[in-house]
Length: 305
Length: 331
Image (cartoon, rainbow over the protein chains, first blue to last red):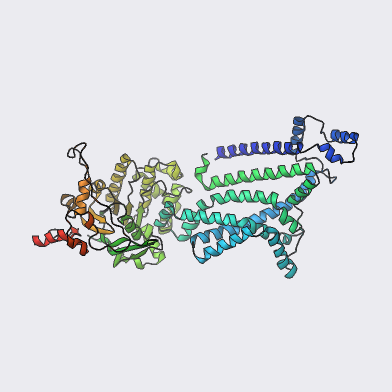
């Protein structure tokens, strides 16, 4: 197990390093940064001054290592747009996105797994069909529309919850439902398919032949094996929600990381874009790593590899 | 001798897209305490279906009916789900054909060996583990203590089947159903496992229903034999009587198919039974074996034969009108 974790950790680190190089290079080759920072009206001297000031005159390898060393120390430089450090912008936005993503994922898992299990046990009954329809609606409905519907019903008409902002936990309820419903169907379907397959397996028959209770058979023997692919999917979904929840964030006026990245791209605020890309990538890598470890804990056969 | 299991006119119907598959068509069986009954027949003759019906492991869509299905005086068909779970696992257990897939890959062998006895007999984990180690050792698994913490994928197929055998014995059952437990194993391992099952069965006095398609296996271990064909028992007798004096044309055909070292000439054609098994969907008219039989008459096509008892030995029964005719002549 220790060998497994170490190996996975090394893989994760090398992926992180690759991502940092790619994101650095992409930005570097997207145009002359000094010119775009200085603006269209700047004179040649002004551009040159900015180039020296931001270290853009150094060789590219040196620029990369300089950037990497500071990035490891969580120093991503200053934003071109806000006269503020990138780190303080991110540390303001990241908790919002993490809270939203975490709540949405938690909600999705809490609904998807029990629903998937029940649908599999009651395969081809009306319960199964209802669960599948619930999933199809979630998959098909655009999240901006669902978000607006939630606001109209629960904020505007019923006054139960606030429509937007992020000052209290109540503000996160509707966005978490909106984002969670979007993430739930895939997990639910995967749980259902996995359960159907596992319930037909020989070792479930063995468990039944031992006279175990149906709940032990389903929850102990079947679910643990069926849920393994769902863990990997959940990790990917959370990673996606960290970077891609821009729509939900803007519908509910949550000033999260997604919105910051979106705005910074349109403002050519490169240090911020670079930092956000790197942070989301690192989260992705960390999540994949945790999913791998969790899977290995669930399935002993994975530990040998 | 006390009968531990008594089955009368067991029928199993499975709905399929092409009509009802009548997999088991009225089987009569009994198993005495501590004896080894071999059920033998080719693929699709309903022998596995019978064992699954006895264990209550058939899918819900399967319709099971019987005049009697009694285990130690209890009617298995009328038991509640809870009572059924009590009997299953504690007093009846099963060994399956596929040792590679019959153990849960995610749990240790110790966990899977012990969970049944902890549930049924309320044993502590330590006591259960002690018994598991004892039985693993009896089942010929080397380093039994170490195995408790191992996972199925760390063991070979033969070892896994030994673990399954130990698992079946955990609660000291009165009856073990072994459904082709050696079919998926290497020939050398097969012989070891057969010997092991026979030894343990005699040592613990457990009754065993041993399901196989291999008459060679039957000859080595059976006390009594039931030969199945197309969902019915066509002949049943003590192993001795069956091999010495097979009565049903199907049994005779099966025995003829086995090449005998020294007797069957090298390069000579091996005997086989002509024709194929009839489809089990829908009703069968007359004798199911009629189209492949060497002694069939027009009468065989019209009348469905019943099991007839051989006059000289009540234990020897056969489902063939031609043979029962010869019984009458003998009397």
